[in-house]
Image 1 (tube, rainbow, N blue to C red):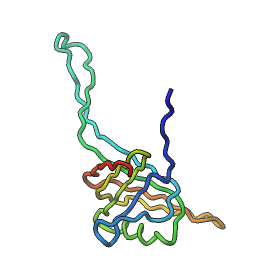
Image 2 (cartoon, one colour):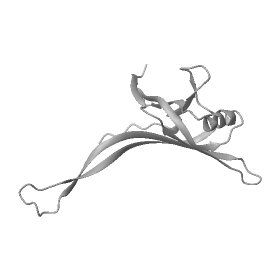
Image 3 (cartoon, rainbow, N blue to C red):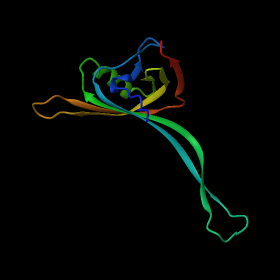
Image 4 (cartoon, rainbow, N blue to C red):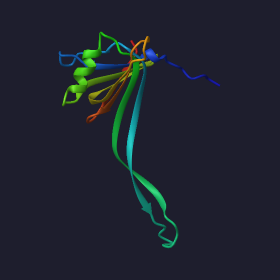
Length: 147
């Protein structure tokens, strides 16, 4: 049996577009990230043509795709303004998600809304943050072979 090739968490990067269009940077602070791919489904009953009284099986049609990102970690002074600006912005922000494997890097690029920004401040301890983003339109996937 061949073992699966694994990657470390640092090989998954969430980058926000800077003030220079087409340029992205990873805000400091995330120690954990979750990228969620969602497909919305619509149910349809599929009748039995030979037995109209039979209980129909449920079929499902895909109706939309979405991506969400949640991240948690330290509320770093270096990036708090970046996150606040993105959260306050009425428009979605440019986002790039890179997942680097040994043989390739898969990148998703598009726009996302910063949905929530949470700061947890226990007395005498480091302030942490949780941030949630939702896709706003298509997230375009590209694949780049390792160099």
